[in-house]
Length: 288
Ligand code: F3S
Image 1 (cartoon, protein in one colour):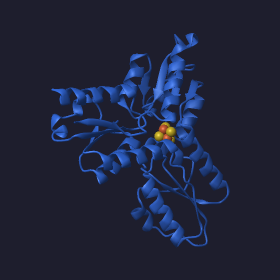
Image 2 (cartoon, helix red, strand yellow):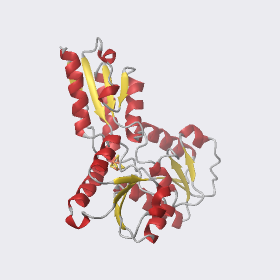
Image 3 (spheres, rainbow, N blue to C red):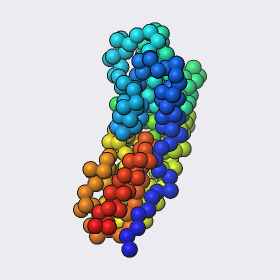
Image 4 (cartoon, protein in one colour):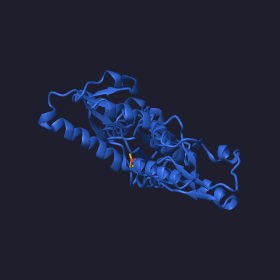
């Protein structure tokens, strides 16, 4: 008998739910009916979510388009946040601004500002091309950004300085623990700030146990979504039959051949509707 098992934590996280709710509230408020409504960047890293708000009246714009906005236009700041410079540009335009930056992203930013004030040098672990990292790190001059422990090992940590180490919210928890261990064993002058968000940790743990239990794992989510990508890496390292699916069309019948325990997990920005559609497609193939 074939069974489909869902990870015990998957799909929308707190930050994504808040961002979605904020946009829904803006749409429902009658005073906004005739206003131009924009979202700066991808609200969350999921095309389906972005497109559904575009259908309802929001226009997604790039940072380079800020100059064309008019006074009073509604602008929603995406869940990953923005850089200090972009924030300044927006404020100068007298817009009707709404901030969907996830509270966990803001907490890291505030803690880094505190650390700078206290005289720490900042070390940051994350993907420097990701909007969250660009936003957070724009607040700190002389910040050193590393993608991995291997990169971090190459730099000289000066014993007489004090350092503050923080990470992207969606870092792989295991990688974080390796970094922490290495730093603690080699240096006593590094303050390690653990802010991998709870939703990320829960989803990573749930994916780990799922990958060990099933014959094939489907990780559902956007290809640009950092947390989805991490779930994929974790699952793939434990179960070679792991596939990242963005939409129903990405599912191939061959992935299911000979498999009796099918696992499903999803990133923090993947809506339930997408999960359900893909699950239904799997059932359809199995029943055929
Ligand atoms: Fe926020 Fe974590 Fe979600 S940082 S947007 S709660 S994955």
